Image 1 (tube, rainbow, N blue to C red):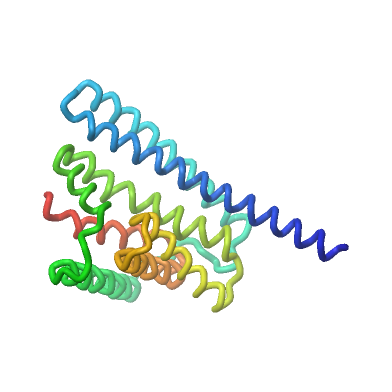
Image 2: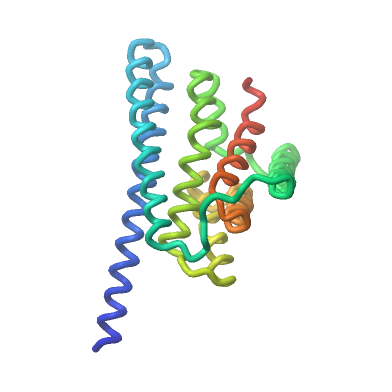
Length: 233
C-alpha cells in the first residue's frame, strides 16, 4: 500500500512540475505573440507603438518573474551547485570552444540547405519575414531577450524540475531531452531540421553543466542568434 501511495505521490509531483514548466513556456509564447501581432500591424503605426509598449512591460515582468523562480529553485534544491563561475582566461577559451561547435552546426546546416538536402525551416522563413517588416524590435528581441528567457526555461528551470540528481546518467538524459524539446518547439515537426536545432540545444545544455552558470549559456545563445541575424544589420 505504501508503495502505491509513494508512486501516486511521485506521479502527482511530476504532473505538477510538468504543468508549471508548460506554464512558463506559455507565458513566454504570449510575449512573442505580442511581437508577432505588432509586426502584422506594421502599416498601422499607432497599433504597433501601443503593442510594443505592452510587450516591453510584459517582457520586463516576465524576465523578472522567471529569473526569480529560477533563483528560488536553486536555493531550494541545487545538488549540481549552479551559481556564478568566475570568468577567467580558461573559461573564456572554453566558451569560445563551445561557440565554435555551435558555428560548425550552423555551417553544416547552411550547407545541407544549399545542397537541397534539407529545406529552409518554416520558422526561419517566418522570422526573416518579421525582421524585414519590423527590423529593430524583432532583431532586438531575438538577440537580446530570447537568449536569456529561453536559457532560463529550457536549461535552468527544465533541468531542475525533471533531472535534479547530479549523476552522469541524469545529466546526459537531461541534456538530451532539453535539447530535443528545444528543437521540436522551434520546428513543431518531426523532420531532420529538428536535429539541427536540437544539436544547438545539446551544446547549450552541455555548456550549462560544464560551467554551472547560466550566464555562459546566455552568452553563447546571444552570440549564436547575433551571428544568424547579422545579415539583417
